[in-house]
Length: 460
Image (spheres, rainbow, N blue to C red):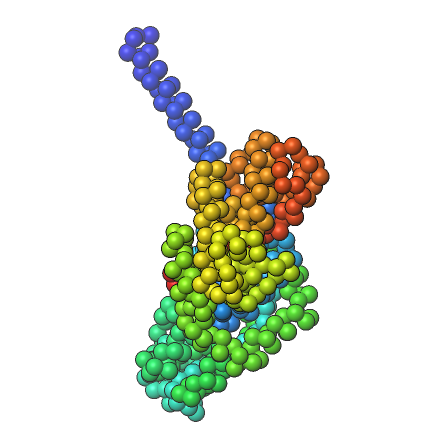
């Protein structure tokens, strides 16, 4: 065999080996989306169920610092059943929610979708959560559809309204136009009041709540009779679907009807909450003390909504609040802390906030070298504010002793939870003894969850 032939065979063999290795690499490469797509077991392991929701008066909103909404309360109950926290992901439009579901960014859509949407086989609908009719709403009464003439009806994009109107238009051979916008029903109703548009479509509940208060609005012709509304999961989430359906069957006996009455059978209360200056729907204020909170948050270098979340968690913005342990004021400072940071009148919101922020600055300095990363350090600060930095430092030392990452709150919180166990609170590295550490762990979780809601629903 000549040298040239040997060289060619060697090159060919090398290429074959390279190609074989390339195909093997392709075959073994895992799907990049596999880390996102989880069924119930994976969701419970993660500890959170991520849900796409609307930001409106019937779903999810902030009122005087408190999270409210029909879907919000339903989902909290579902979270308890599944043993997970709910992560609320606000979707500005229905199509966005379906994209997030497809991409694995949410696990469930709780936006009252109807089954007659033309969705792919990649999603499944839950049992009916409830039912609703849809109505035409305008600035004048309408006796029949023919009176619309060539007017334009503006509806929410991605909802079932366009399809329902097209059926009416085709069956009656009418000339009205349908225009979709990426705006919620309540936004379109506001535009009706301002005479920017002539007609829109909304569910019976939303329409009636607005017609009650606005004399300019009229609940018009029925677009579609009561139809089932459903939540949506990925078709691969078979366990999640089964558990949600089981939960729905049970809750329809009493819980869901009672909750429905709370939010929809008293339209005056609902409208007041949604139009209040202290609502994320009608205004952009969380509390009477927003300006003070914003000013003091600058001292901390924090997003003011995080400080607002602490104030809500501590006192519900009540300057006269007193805990069973004697903590007082907006930031619920104990007498020794009040004295240490110069607060003489804990019921004065200015003094209370100033003292509380001084305490938070002290805790920030305490944890600065121990936990350099700001996002992690904030969790240590919050836990220390709740239970005292001595107990959190004990958990920090235990984490180090057992070879874990003591700059990671997830690791340290595990040992803070264990501080009620004699095996751990009697350990020589523990200086502050027994503690109900789980209370502080839950406190951190609750404050940060509320902060995320404030960030999603209240402008900075």
